[in-house]
Length: 379
Image (cartoon, rainbow, N blue to C red; front, top):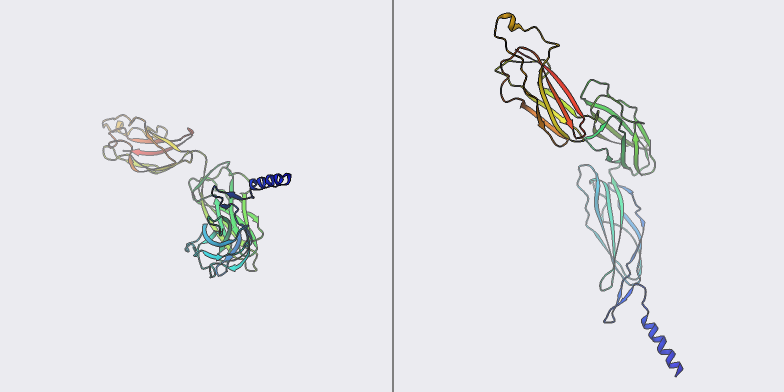
């Protein structure tokens, strides 16, 4: 009797135990909860391939139950060039048993001429249970044309820098051969003023291996006071071949003083206007990365450069100077452009002849402003 009691207790305890990753259902059906395990030997993260290469996978797949299949696909992430993105048909590899090695060429073809850049190789494995458990593994690979691949993240085209800023290069380079160096240089393209352009010594960044991230400050310091304008930032990458393969990328950046930029093309300096005929028109480009708020304009007589009142000596009717009211144009955003904008509703009235100046004040959201004065003559 005592032996029967012990057997009953042991049976109850055994039924109450749960197998790891096994979940009993109300109908006593056992559900497998364990996902297959994927161990990839090749390709490794950031492996570099060139046009014509084949992508070979070496991997080991295991599971506590029978395996079913492995699906391998390729997707484009980012890159350069005008070629089409390579999107091969996914490969499906049948699996069986609890353990299987995979060693085969993928996508049944060499890499075609395609968009260079970073691709994502996705490996998906399923087991053969009624409700399959699925495991995935993703590996980034790099496809190039055979010359170094350069992907620049920062700065981007049209980036704006001000005096005192630093220029930092954030990029990724890759090659199927050993990389040598990255050289960054700067030259001015369109100056906005007559100050001396900034021409720093080029920065050389040593490289090694077939794949490298770059996160370096360029030109050994801050941007000095220099000519404002558009500059060309040229990034050049070379490999270690006897006849080096070279890739270069040009990025246009803008360097400013930190105050709003105001470029006036009309009226031109020393333009002549006729009373009761001409209208004062404004053509200008305004920009500021902090955001623009307003443009204030006014007209005053330029007494310093003026000539005697010829009307008084000729006996003609003497008119008072033209003194229109100061006016404001509200602005918003980082950029504004005016093309032949009439600053006043009518033509310049009859007034004293002589030199005047148009005073323009452009403000940004920090209340910093740029002032421009354009001299003109009224006759």
